[in-house]
Length: 253
Image (cartoon, rainbow, N blue to C red):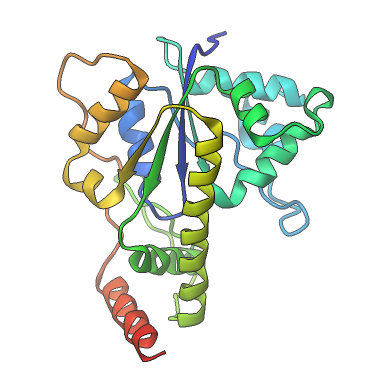
């Protein structure tokens, strides 16, 4: 089993380009394999959504125990050089920490204690988006049509027709801003080396930002870095229309 000696934590909010960044980092082969390995949802609201040791990763590997599942996540998320990668969206952090605290040795442990214990020699990336209105529009649309990413091998399969809802967009923008504030607070308390990557800049210069992250991790990649994002841009004329309506409504208020 590959045990990590260094960790990369990507702190994000929905629709900030985190899947693109994670796929670029995974393609380097030396920055871990970051994704939402520890996705956790509210079991009351989503009783049929399997997570952690009840989920597909655990079933695929025959794992039913919480500790063995956490070992498995280290294994699948770590590249041969010992770097482990993990992405977390802010609105799932408390739920994930709660699952850690269900282990007797972590009962009552703080977020900082849990993260340092599970993420050896952790380095952090805060991923943000400059245009939070457009981010909220993207989130509102995906929440309705259930199309969260599209790639050459993952076609869009919308489950319904999205409808403009200015109140929903406003609520989601506030969640984004609150999530960014709370990430900054937590990462400050964590005290680990941290950089911020802005989505719009990442899209324009993916190689530069990958090199920033590799420098943060203190790992070398002598050749050219991957720049194909592994996902397609989803925003279209409908997004533009919703952004214009939302901004016009906000200005009127």
